[in-house]
Every structure is written in C-alpha cells, then in structure tokens.
Image (cartoon, rainbow over the protein chains, first blue to last red):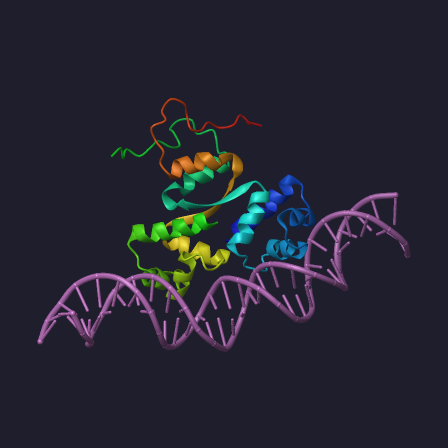
Length: 93
Length: 93
DNA sequence: TATATTTATATGATAGTATATATTAAGACG
DNA sequence: CGTCTTAATATATACTATCATATAAATATA
C-alpha cells in the first residue's frame, strides 16, 4: 500500500512537478500532497485515481496470476528473450 | 473508479463469497461491503487493498502507455496472433 | 538578510468506518 | 397459504480520519 504512494512520488518527480503544481492540476490543496507523500494519511480511492491520472497512470486491479507479468512489463524488464513472457491460456470455449 | 468497485463485486461472486464471508476474511463489518458494492462510499486505499488481496487481486499503478496491453492480458484477449501484443521498447542503455 | 520556492503543520467541516439493528429472500413445513 | 427460520444484504448512529483552508517552516539563491 505504501508502494502505491512511493510510485506516486516517483511519478511526480519524473514529470518534474512540485507538490503545488500537482495539487493545482489535481484540484487538491498542496498540503494533502505533502501528507500523502509522507504516508501520514490513508487516502480515498477517488483521490488516488485523480492523482494517478494527472501523472499519466491508471489504478487497476490485477488478478494475482498476472502480477509478475504485469510488473515485468511495467518495469520493462526486457532481455529475457529465451521464453515468451506471456502466451494466452488455451481456453478457447 | 466505479470500475474498480464493479471488479471487486465480480471477483467476490467468482470466488463464491457472500458479503459476510468476505467481510470476515478481510476483517471488516459486512455492512461496509454492502455500502461499498452499492457505490455509496469512497473507500480508502487500505480498504481497497485489503479486499483485493482476499479476492486474489493486487492494486497497481499502470503507466498510461501500458494500459491497453495490461487490459488485454487481464481480459485474456487472445487470438491476435498476427502481431505481438508487446515487445520491449528499445531502450538498452 | 531578503526573497522566492517548496514542503510541512494546525484546525474545523465532511465522509468512512465500527457496532448494532433492520430489511429482504428463500426454503421448510404445518 | 401463512409464518417460521435462516441466510444474505441493507440501514442507523457514534467515532475517527480525510479533506479544505490557512499558516508556518524549511530550502535555496542572490
């Protein structure tokens, strides 16, 4: 859960936003961004989604079976050319 | 944001849990599950994460560029054999 | 030091949460 | 049919935490 917060912070820095800039874009007070990034509060979903969107991210529910695959994609862990990272489960009908 | 809630409901049904069963597993009152699934409240991250975990899901922040790919994987949209769904961006150093 | 920029804190209104209770739904059986 | 019982979902009220507004502290730069 703190991971999500860390990612928000990382994403903000990557986009070069200050807390105030992000706050204005999201429509929240800057103080909230501060509290959030310090892990002082347990924000609501709508707040998370709002911030994530401004930072070009989407909040998604990932079925556990796909966790590592999705993480690999996001972290762009390339290099493993030997076997495919993913192939569709044979479930046709 | 309501999508996330719908997915929680779908996941609960798929696992065959009642609201009470889920509530007990998560450690929340059943009434919360009810309110959540009715979309009456804007729950906190920790609550979302707790419920998701019990339902074998993980809450993740997906960079926008990977949205459709991740969705395709999750929805197991197989069949598109012609071109690869994903290949690593050439960013090797 | 003075000034500007960025981040952190304090306090009252709003909304999620905990506990308990009520409503609804479906079956069993006289 | 009627109502008894049990399971499943929904609501009511007190308590706690987020959120809004404002202010303070910290950091940097000249």
